[in-house]
Image (cartoon, rainbow, N blue to C red; front, top):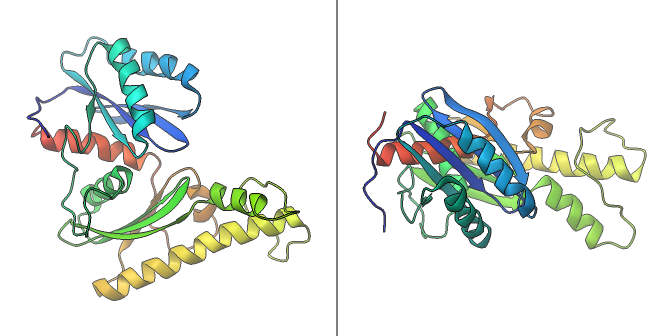
Length: 261
């Protein structure tokens, strides 16, 4: 059950994903001092929390806010944050409402990260927009002119696609996503890189075009996530590449719930 929140002067926000955890400070200067740590490296969590929390020292009203698509990892992070910060962390959806209304079949099933990224993009644009996030999964979502989350598509992320090719074939090597080179790839490594990145770019174009058909207008396209720069480099229809968009949306959710501008 969500609760009434008091305005905060500074927030420690955490985005707990499947493979990475993002930590940052949000205050009147916006989002800053972002740290990204591996989700499976718990030995590094405490130092990252301590360093981030220390930036807010001296601030009278502060809070810890967590958005997560990996509940067990998020719970362990929250326990450590409570020990370190002496503040009970608040979870989106459990303690804090999601930052925008949803027009989908199963609101409880949609990822917090998708909604937060979409809300942060719409908060700035105030017009129909598509938001693509490139992480373990690639998600492409749409927001209406009225600021309602309409849902979208989920497909394998760049790393996941590379890993799947390696694990489900006899001879294809494990390749890390990279910037494509010559379109006529002359070795297996480059062929996989080309295939994975151009497949993501093609899917992005197709999905956004279908959004535009339904909306009767071309939505502004905002992309985020670790793989976003690779895709942005090979397409010409991205309006903005915004790192850490989900963290911005997590902070936005708290501030909306607390009645802050």
